[in-house]
Length: 91
Length: 228
Image 1 (cartoon, rainbow over the protein chains, first blue to last red):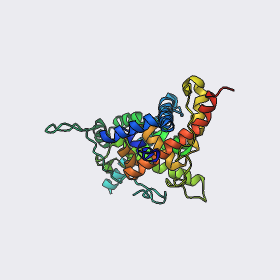
Image 2 (image 1 turned 135 degrees about the vertical axis):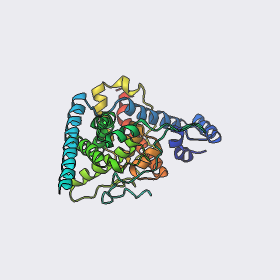
Image 3 (image 1 turned 135 degrees about the horizontal axis):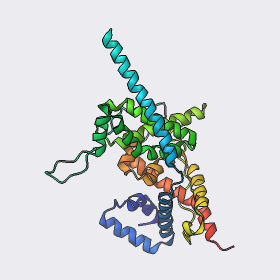
Image 4 (image 1 turned 180 degrees about the vertical axis):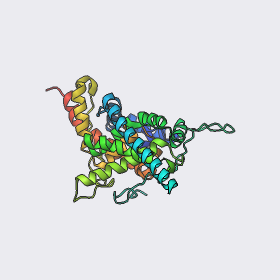
């Protein structure tokens, strides 16, 4: 396995979707290629740092404000729909 | 398949059913339990607004962050979050339960976010395929180790700034795949369903998104690890 072959399998390797035979080849390559070893380590850190530090906050106050606005729109929609059905029934 | 979301002129409607089984996998011979969301959706359909409110509580964070990652604009993300849930509420009858409710919501959110981007860039078509053909970062060039790790080197707020700046620089097609798969933790299949892409297309974009981010972050983290 060379570096190009290894890169092609990198996503499957991270996602644990690689069969045992290929996994052995990947590990052998990693054992002999420092560059690919660094790529694996720093790519894993890239994923971990984003998972561990949500770059965007979503404070409870915002959640509450948005939820309130959505529910207002939903309730109005229900009232309008019921109103239209009632008028149609009367006609 | 990879071009299905090639343009936001081809809008995804929340009515498009996506083939993800909403039941948890069960051993052979044992009836699969329906996903708890299915019950809440049924209750909401029957007029129970409190049930719908529970669904909002469960997924508002995910929808807001997905919209913010795509649009890079907080006000847009707030509007989109409202629009996504309201649209879903209006179309609840069309949710057949063949897909996860959350995947259905994400699909609406992606569509609404791309529409919002198009409105902002009036003369330019914004698409999931924009700039994905770039070779930038697809071949690793930086082989420096990150020592000590970023958490030890930077404060929380510095790290937050770096992460925001770095992900904002990715093309939308890569940013969205990375967001759904690696930040929001959707499976590869769910990401493919939400974006209308094939699984191989998601894997390919994910690899390149990860490598581009790694390369860009390396500029900060490598430098920090190098003694002056």
